[in-house]
Amino acid sequence: MIYTVTFNPSLDYIVSMKDFRLGKTNRTCAELILPGGKGINVSTVLQNLGIENTALGFTAGFTGEELLRKMRGTGFHCDFIHLDQGCSRINIKMKDFDGTEINGQGPSISTDTIRKLMEKLEQLQAGDILVLAGSIPESMPDSIYRDILASLNGRGILYVVDATKSLLLNVLEYHPFLIKPNNHELGEIFHVTLTAREDVVPYARKLQEKGARNVLVSMAGEGAVLVAENGEVHMQPAPRGKLVNAVGAGDSMVAGFVAGWVQKQDYRHAFHMGISAGSASAFSELLASKEEIYTIYKSLENK
Image (cartoon, rainbow, N blue to C red; front, side):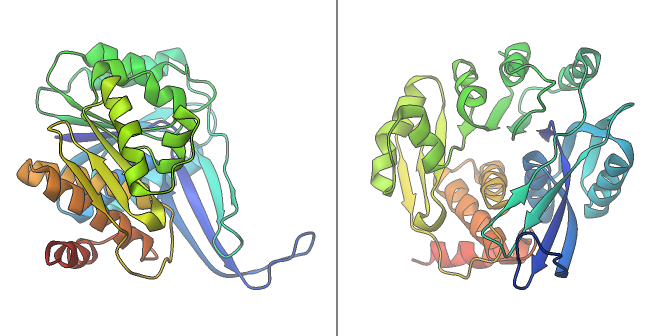
């Protein structure tokens, strides 16, 4: 079974406006409300691909109830912990204004509630895949990713981690199966600027030296690079298409890679599935459908 964890999920309020003006009353010409959060996005794309999974995390208040309603409507299994105080956050995505976003804080999460999540994770078994993705609320300890992997260490669970800076670096000693920094995040870790696919390879290998098994680096319009634990290096320019919505593209890449690995345990296949899913979501108003993903996948395989 695949499990995803979203510590601070949101309702994403995505709005389009014509001629947006600062300091003036602006009216939307289109709007959409979707469940948000990196783990939830991964679960959604996995579900679209027909891969069974369970989404874990925390919800609170009336926004949390709407989150659960929308998630259950997509068909995947949710096992979120309800918080008695606060509300799950609302994030505003201004689609046509320079990518501007306004993200909420989210509810406070107590030590007792964290313990409940840990108890759920204790039920995972050898061969399960655990995806930890995204930021954490300020009320949670910075060590939470590391604490989770430490508690599950040695049980044959595959860890996938999509996080930044210390959240990512602190888990490498537990040998996560896959990490997915983008080129900017990878550059920040090593204080360099990485723009070409070839440039990321030595730095991805440095993360392997620190413990990561496979390093998948997303590079937006430049494509992606996979440095695999068996020594293979896969590079792929971005498939051609019109960028419609970049939100969730990186999460879709993670979902595609995990789905591909579950299907064939082959790195080339998993890499192409990741590229295909990430690109398909970027070219779509919503997160990628199975048909959209496989259309791009076939174009990669036929090259």
